[in-house]
Image (tube, rainbow, N blue to C red; front, side, top):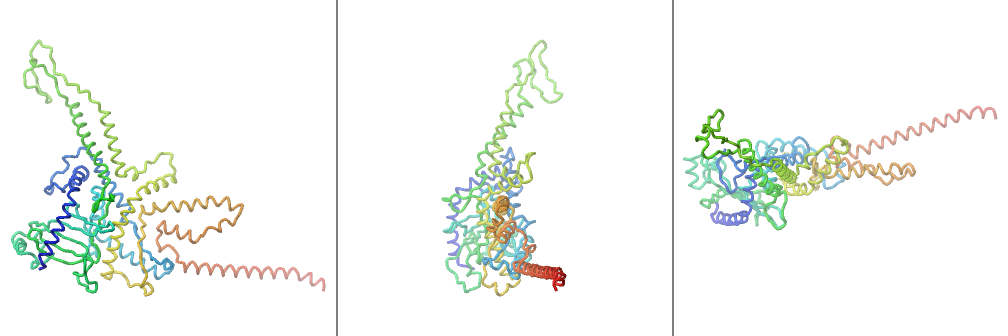
Length: 533
């Protein structure tokens, strides 16, 4: 078993991270109470299956958050369409058929492994955390059956730290696990005596564990064991401060994107839910008051004379109330003078503010009856471009480390076909082709199309104006921006061969035409020559 000094040092570092996160916890709890009740376990500890909507009187914020998270999933990592591709850093290799076929094979294997795993449900859960709490945490591990295994971790159990460049490189996770699961995962001999006894006597009792993943300060890269990898992975029993297991990772096994992030805040991000929290709390209070007002109007309080009726007053259907004969006193409802339209208008203002904070007006296009198809497309692209800042951060903090981690795991497990020898020193980079990424670049394509529209009238005066346009380069750029599958596009070599064959055919036809014209001219000149002779 590892030295306990390491466990004590890690617990000391963990205490620092706990202190740094304490300011966020009450904020997260309020966000969860009003916008994501199923995850309201930050500072409050609830039992499974407990009712969690006691503070919610209006579900606008809940529905808006769900819509934004589902839209991000559909626009960035839609499992039914391609959302990334790989390309060579050396652009000259794009025209080589063998290199392209190998890279397409690598991409297909990655998509197959990702789609076969639990990626779709895990990443959607992470988008929900991202939209509500501003920070998402998802682990990526190797799996014997499906190659990859994803797991989204609740923000309440994760403690983060950044490196000098502002990227998360340290993740501490405090969570619970059953004793029998610990014995299966770590082995009975590696557990402390206390946990061995509990695994034997109370196998399904849950025990707290601490999992720390952080960069190692010193390690030997020539050694291939898990204790000499770039990132350390240490499981600790925080009760006894004993190290249970120590291993390592070649790269950080977590992706920790932040929706928005202030430059002076470290570790955690901010979210649209934080922007909408004040309006959400106000709307819930308004809805509560409106409900009470409606109750008073439907079942109003009654005004009774102090001595005209025999008590008690019965307000149930069919109830009989006795009053003294000869009196004119009657039971009358109290007019409270409620103004329902004012309350409803104020509530709708808050609802619109909440929807705007969650980009609902950007995600749903309000199509008028007079809009043409071109107008719809252009307005959709403009709305997509408004999410550009969000896309840039998610690409840098989520998509890139996620794809790199999956690629490295599959490479180490030898899931790819051997690369051709001439690709030994060729680097590969990521290109994002999701619907949202395409919408960011379609403006350049529209500019190129407008160029043709403006040059067409000029070409009637001067036909050489199109000499300024590189048609081949423009065609390649449009293919790249639109994300057309490589299997449907001809390679540079194939295009060159077809052009050469076409040129030879045209040359042969020209020679045949010239020979025909020569023969025809000779035939016409023969009678004249004969007459002269």
